Length: 331
Ligand SMILES: [Zn+2]
Image (cartoon, rainbow, N blue to C red; front, side, top):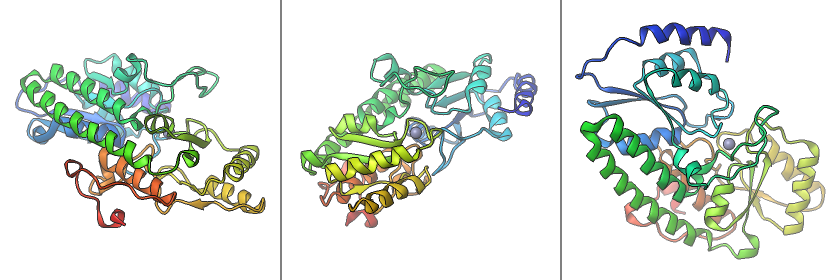
């Protein structure tokens, strides 16, 4: 956070006091692609006339490293509500969220109900300042995303009571879809034989995913992409891959591929061989909004189809309530 941006923030605080007339739509700012998607699902047909959403991050953007721009600060200070992921995922937003908390706007982390229910994995170190933090990638267990859905719907219902029925009904329908997604995911991830169920990715974003579907997970970097993988980490992971005869690793859409490629080289130098998944996985950012992988459900489905295919298996047909697999995924 630069001084300039902070100055800008406080300057805008004064201007934002101007009252909004009832006729104007409510302005909502969302940070990550996952939070944007969930907000859109819950807002449904109210989008446009009643609610306007300004998303800050797009496809392929790493939220750990994303630095809010001046226009982001302006948008957040105009907003009636700011929804973010939380658990320090948006690592460069700390002071900004604190300052927003001083304002009379709704500022809400969608991870809140998951944290409150005790479903987050704790005890991680981000820096000297943050030595006991939770793994922020809670969305990768669809059961956690159900809690997040219900929590955000309640926030929206209280914030805009005129439309509370719409938010709660949209949440109920979506939770049903997420149940189907979870059940399909369990079935799909079980098509790989038990002793081979190890998911290897660039950074440690998939612990909740592994927990949801009964897979062991190894990330080369830690829970934040701020951590750099060292030579020792690469050697250690290469040895693990050879020992466990793991056939494939995966690159993430929001993390550069170099480190995973270095592991692949280390495995070959040691006389082994390991492939790289035919498609990148979506971890901290989903696909573009107009793509299949640009929704939460599409992101999870794309990842699962890609992972099981990397292990030579095939996922079962997708329930029709979850949409149709695009041609490039249909195999
Ligand atoms: Zn991450």
